[in-house]
Image 1 (cartoon, rainbow, N blue to C red):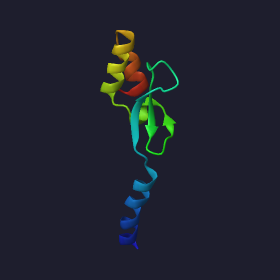
Image 2: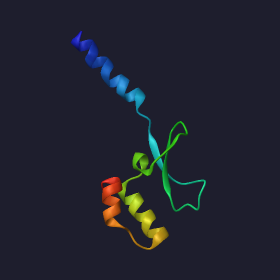
Image 3: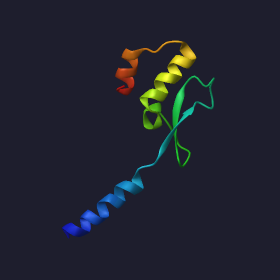
Length: 76
């Protein structure tokens, strides 16, 4: 029974986790990052964007990066 569980458990987790990608908000001016899943769902930037992508986007659109907000909002 234990061996069967060890074989099935990874499959359950791999099926339930979607892959997320970092995108610019298609409904705004592009200054906000979102995440989009492989199936098309939209989510917050933290799902698919790296700290580097978020930091670069902030600098590109606003000319500076609020490091404290980046750390508190995204753990970067």
